[in-house]
Image (cartoon, rainbow, N blue to C red):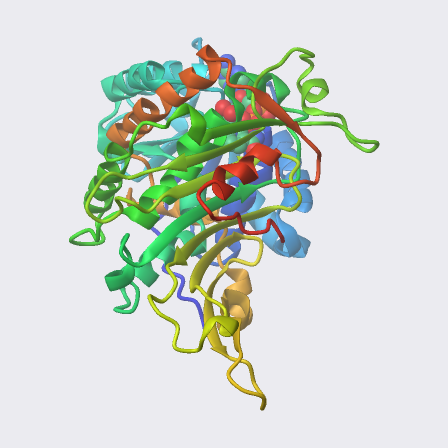
Length: 484
Ligand code: NAD
């Protein structure tokens, strides 16, 4: 099946922080792959802008190295790399001063889409927006892309929104959450709203509970200073897990339109019950012979920040009252695995007798690795010997179902940056969504901090602290195994 590439009109994209880790590892390689796929027309330009002094030639050399390291097999095509590097420029700029701003403005074409990617620390978002405005680059077809963290509580997020909206209109602001750019996340909407099969069952009458897991094997070494101030609740739950929760739980929007979708997501956040103390488990990974523990990684022997969080969440609306949603995320866990599992209720009565056991359908949306969707069905075990039941997955691994093309699906950054250029905000967070997410999680974070909710040690390579298992056991349920 050939994937359709619809080229976008020539645009100018400025990457502030264009020499940084995120730009070199994700943003520029994503642009390179879209360029290789033929999605960018001649005339498109990408301009790195950062503090360090270098010229465009030196910048191209830096990006050439980054592509070799991070862009995958496409970077082995020397002609493609040379062609792509030729559309790059570099400007030395001071986000908080005057250096480089006139030069940047003179490089850009005001007649076309101009996107400014803020791949810098959040303390620079305001100064960048202000200078773009002051130098006449905030008008018309201009748009800005801001990375997480978007604030560290409700009031800082509101302040940031106020600053950005002083210089740009909401329709020009793209708050990126790369989880929303994943193929499966969008497929989640297709599965729910383009099939008749699931939507009638998508409520508390048929769904026993939902589990959302985002598990990582890496620790926080290298970003310990930031992480120790954030913790799993701010770094993962407030944004990625809540966004997934919204998509799985929202009402069908009237149309697939940015504001219609975001209105429905916002309603979910506003319907969340406050989290009770007993419904949160926090953990911190220990070290082992191969790796340091959390406290060593962040250089703070007394740290009480969580590298793991599990929560039991309840949505108080007609659709979901009585169906708990369990969220779990952590570092240094057993496997790198992100999934959403919708666990349906047992049939009300088994005609096959007690010995056949009770079975449940589980719809699993795997975000990584092996993006795809499974539906666990109960069937008769093949062969003679009576009616024995067995659970088998209907597996829709995209790579298998759709052939080699599916292995080539754009990664989240590729898709999202192209959405910015096209002006489609559906997969980006609106200001009221971000603020509502903080408004919900702030009291939970305060509970953790003020009431000294213990942070429990867990072994690296485990599924987190024992208490996280108990969080579900006490409801007569259990977590799915974390496996790749
Ligand atoms: P980094 O420290 O590697 O790079 C920072 C960049 O900002 C550099 O290019 C630097 O020159 C530039 N910069 C700093 N001060 C400047 C100034 N005054 N004027 C102009 N440029 C200046 O950081 P990073 O890891 O690339 O992260 C950038 C942002 O993205 C951070 O807010 C981070 O939290 C966020 N983020 C990073 C990742 C990641 O995987 N690295 C993932 C998600 C979000």
